[in-house]
Structure formats: structure tokens, C-alpha cells
Image (cartoon, rainbow, N blue to C red; front, side):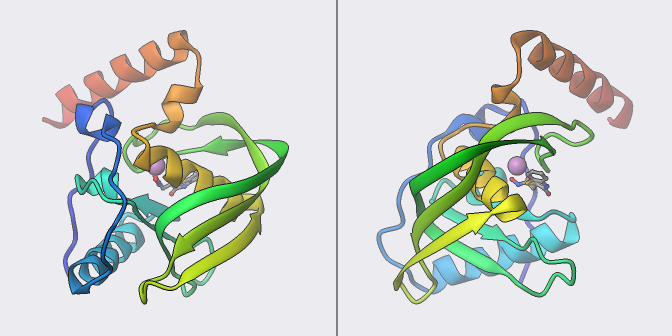
Length: 167
Ligand code: GNR
Ligand code: NI
């Protein structure tokens, strides 16, 4: 297994739309394992392949307290959404920035597991929010895109300033 570097907003590669996985083979299983290791190490509750510059529709999520409930979603699709919820979000690609985003409260997601078997999951709470946040990444969208233009501008300048100090 290996840790993968995470792209930082506003890297234009975060805006690429990921392609569906056509064959679930060992390279996809290795990618998912490396993404899980990267997510746990960060630490974060989810990671989309887009964030590690792999433009395939693969997501890993673990919202458990004990960090022992890894979920892998290949080609995830929202087939149902209900209700609305507003929660504070953060993103490993936008370090140090947190803001409120409106999301569906409950979702049904269809996906393939690592055996290539079709699965369907109903989710609510943090898991539902995280699924929506990760599918956004696969579509080239970051949570910051849900905020006002003014907030986006402030975030860009804050991150640019941070990058100058850390360089
Ligand atoms: O670690 C993460 N926490 C989080 C908190 C609220 C809503 C979404 C998230 S996902 C984020 C990890 C990440 O950037 N995934 O893309
Ligand atoms: Ni994110």
C-alpha cells in the first residue's frame, strides 16, 4: 500500500470529470486500498479518486468512530434524494476551510463493490452528506463551489497566502 499526494484547491485537476470504471481488476482494488490508507492517514472520512489525480469513479468512505467500517463505491450514482440538511463541511483538498453546505438529508446510492457486484445503499446523516461530497468530486466539483462568489474569493486568497508561508 502507499500514501498518495492529495491535490489542493484551486488545482484545475480537481475540476476534471472522472470516467466510469469499466473493469474492476487488481489495479482498481489497489487504488481503493491506497486511497483508504491516504484517507485514514490524513485523517478524513472520505476520499474521491479525483483528489489523488486519478480520474476514475472510485470513492472510499469511513464515517465510523472506530475507523473500522471502510466502504468502497465504484461508479456511485444517486438514484434517490429526500429532505434537506445544512451542515459544516471541510475537505482534504481545501485544508483549514470549513463552511455550511446544503445537501439532501437522505440518499439512495447505487454502485459496484470491489467484486463488481451491483449494490444499493440508503444513507442519512453524515454518511449521506459524505456520499454527496464525494460524488461532487467525481464530477469536478469541490464544496467551495456551493458557496457565494465572495466566499470563494476569500478562500482562494487565504489558501494562496498559506501556500506562500508554507513554501
Ligand atoms: O474529512 C472530511 N470531512 C467532511 C466533513 C463534512 C462533510 C464532508 C467531509 S469529506 C472530508 C474528506 C474529503 O475531502 N473528502 O472528499
Ligand atoms: Ni473533499
